[in-house]
Length: 136
Image 1 (cartoon, helix red, strand yellow):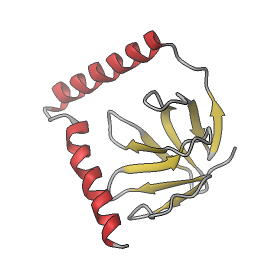
Image 2 (cartoon, helix red, strand yellow; image 1 turned 30 degrees about the horizontal axis):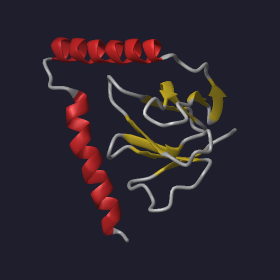
Image 3 (spheres, one colour; image 1 turned 60 degrees about the horizontal axis):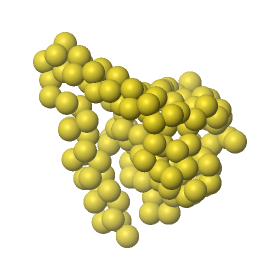
C-alpha cells in the first residue's frame, strides 16, 4: 500500500483512505489505519513521539505505528509513503514498549529541563481539532 502525503495547516473534515496529512503548525500527522478498519491514527510529532522525514518527494514516520488501542492492533512502518507491515506485538511487548516510551520522555525532560512534550501536544491537538471544526 502506498500513501499519498499532503502538507496541510488543518486536517480536512473528510479524511481520505490512502492519504496521510501532515500539519507542521500543529506538529501532528493523521491518516486512516492502513488495515482498513477506518480508525483515524493521530501521530504527534515531537522529540519523544514520532518524527517525520520529507525527502522532497515522500515522507517517512519513525518509529513504527502500533495501533494498540484499536481492535485491529495493526502495526506498520511508513517509509517513503509505502506501508510495510510489522509483526504483531504481544501484550507484554506492548507494555514494555509503552514503558520504554515513558522512560524516554522522562529522560528527555530531565536532559532538556522541560515539561512533558506529550502534555504540551495534547492541548495543541485539541486546538487543532477545534480549528478544523470552525471551517465547517
